[in-house]
Length: 194
Image 1: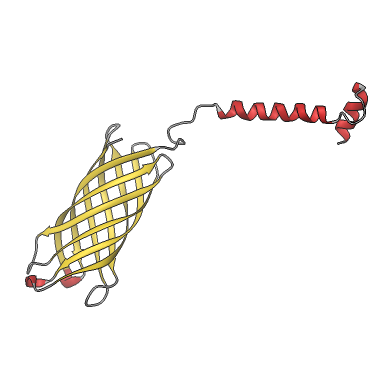
Image 2: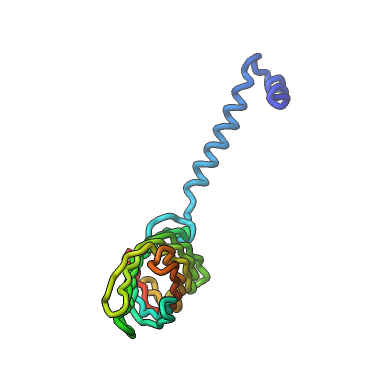
């Protein structure tokens, strides 16, 4: 206030006109913020949605009988340039069966990635349903599945990524004979749709 008083007295402004310099200062500040907002934002900082789809070959170890199985995994990622997104995943373990044991999981959850040039490491947490076929086709069951995982994608060009490694640990907490877990490693391709 002392600055405005001295300015008013020095400029010969009438008493009560101290708001004129304050208004001028406010106009300058607002004008500066409008100009700053018009600056270009880099792709890494801009929002927007990126959707990719992919497929992987999967090798998995089941705690149930210490089985090792092979299968395929399909996924859809929807994420922003700011590293956060969603992943939906379907996994079918049908090959290398013993006594007709096989399973499928369908999960969705959050995904977080970082960018280091062509390399994109990521972490994910998913939840969903698992369908389990018991030995000799005697029974089937559906269970909740909780998944923690991560991996690294390598950008080959603007649209295509090589998913070099995807690691997952699945917990089946309500499995029929007590909690069961699985561990898997997958590799495949990821293609940007838009």
